[in-house]
Length: 388
Image (tube, rainbow, N blue to C red; front, side, top):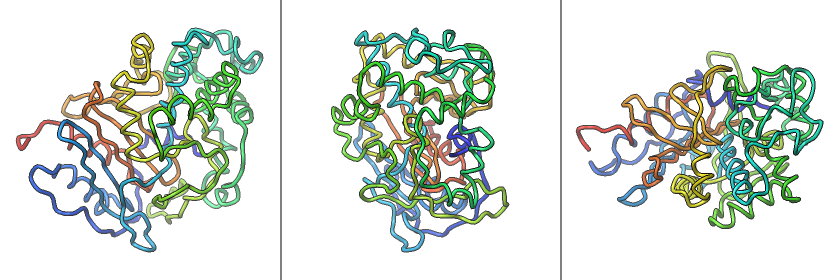
């Protein structure tokens, strides 16, 4: 129901009305002052309702925040809040697939046709020529269902309120994607597509005989103790403490009206972008993934073998994509690794050093301030400065 989480991720900035909010508290010279300044600026200059950043490195854990969780009450951002993580969900899905490959239950070189016979066929598609690996690294060429014109129309402006509680099955959304022609022939480019990850999760269910949600819980959430993480299915409300999620609902106005989009059915995002989590849980997951604690060496290498994010619809500049994870080169030429996601009223990034020992997780509870905020947060933390 979003013009794709990919378009949200690829946006650089969207103009929006500024919301005033309390700034982060004053910092000592050793208390990540550069990051604190970026958090304050995200609220004061970019108009974000609220933003958090949690850093873990050899010195321990640090949490900073600016702005508010609720613009009506002025409630401040806090640790442990749950939020929708959007396409960061893809790394969870890819990890489940990689674990199944390690167990010999499937191969990344298996074709879609082998697991979902007859589903990807016609209109320029041939499931016998698309592999699971190509689904996970977005080189399949399969059209992103979120970019379908009629589907996208239901998710913007006044139509969003009419359709916010709609429930979709994976099969429905895959069919919407396949009704559009492919971006390119399999393996001939990079085209970020949520349809890829719906197909991957459907293969998980075929290979295991259990639901995707059950496998997610059994393989990742429970073993890592991710107590704030869950797949909501068609649950419209976010469980527990959480910030309100504010959205422009894709308004093209220079000064768009801001809406509370917290409550909505995200079955439209499922295995591509439906998970709810916290900064602490994302630290634990990404740290374990980067640190090689979730996959054997062979699958770990597969996960972090990247492709160029060019040759198809534009994605985030300076990135390369693996299996549900990506690398990003910062302006100072430092490369960070991890995951990112965007959905209505929530943008999040969880990135760090390749070994997972230095990580930053950040989230904004509004969808118009743009990726530049995260670029600034990452640069403030990971780019060398004379003060460090």
